[in-house]
Amino acid sequence: MPSVDGMTTTYAGATAAPAPARRFLRQLGVDTQYVLLGFPIGLITLVLCMTGFALGIGTVVIWIGVPIMVATLFMSRGFAVVERARIAPVLGREVTHPVYRTARTSGFWRRSMAPLGDGQAWLDMVHGIFRFIPSTIGFSFVITWWACAIGGLTYPLWDWTLPHPESNNELPELLGFDDNAFTRILFYVVIGLIFSATLYPVVRMAALLEAAFGYSLLNGVDRLRREVAQANAARDVAQEQRAAAVSAEAVALRKLERDIHDGPQQRLVRLAMDLGRAEQQFTTDPDAARATVAEALSQTRETLDELRALSRGIAPPILVDRGLRAALTALAGRCTIPVDLDAPPLDRLDPSIESTAYFVVAEALTNVAKHSHATEVQVSVQRNDTGLLVTVADDGVGGASLAKGHGLAGLDDRVRAAGGVLAVVSADGEGTRLTAALPI
Image (cartoon, rainbow, N blue to C red):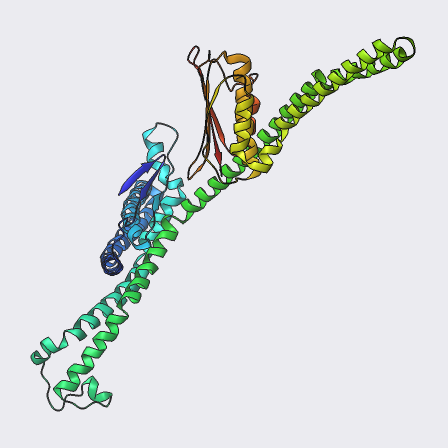
């Protein structure tokens, strides 16, 4: 049945899934009626399209031919719409209705003349003129095979109605068979069985010949356009993902540089100063030197802790060794706000997808701890047929945004770089719900 999707109308073929025998008979019936109806329709379209085309060309010098040609193109479009609906069950697939060219202005004459500049409209007329060729070929084969199959199998029922004079040179006699009723009937029944056995492939090939001819003219250009549009869309998505990856990498590097500068680097500078002071104190005040060294050791431990925290943000070992669920469990345990984690056991995913999912939860929990004033966080990780769904929801003050300049902009870039989509619902005073859909 027709269905509208954007700018295209789709004619769907058979959707039921009957038993093999029923499907076989149904396809045979579909192909037979398609070819048998195609022959008279082909005759009608040949006469009408040829007449309209000839009149249009012949009277174009006095301008009468222009509206005649437009009317012929519109008529061809109508026959094309009918043919697309007939082709779908034969090919067993969707046959799209192409978008015809329309005038961008609102003038009546410009809109009326639009088909003259539409390539698909001319292809519809070409199909209306030349479809008679495959229709005639297919009709001849289908009529012949059905007639021979039915006539041969039913020959015993009507043999008695035919005259059989002794001098009649029938086909069995020409082939060397005896001229008696039993041999004659058996011969024609065998002929009927042969044509019945080959009926389906012959009818199927005849229908496919006519349907393929129609599909190539009525949908070939549209299919090529859609393939080009899909290729362009895929290219645009790839470019967006590449740009998002570059942006996410730049943000991650700036954040790492800032964290190192504000944390471990400052501590290492202080550590160097403390050790230098301790070196000078060893000769004058050993007790003060030991205190300075003890403080330096404390600074060293704190620096190591910060470096470990930074390394966990880049690529935590537990994620690599034990998978996403274990890494998220450890992440939830370190959060300063109670976390309700719903993460069932998962098979190992692509490392980039696992890393992105971990980064989404880690960044979201960090933002919750810093800005949300929430009392509880719910983290859910679910896998379905299409991908991985990661959700982080809190009961904080809300107000989060994916706009540039906000903390989640870099997270959005990272998710898009992995081919996913990030959505945030964060009304003021109603908490924040962050959802990331990642492909697998």
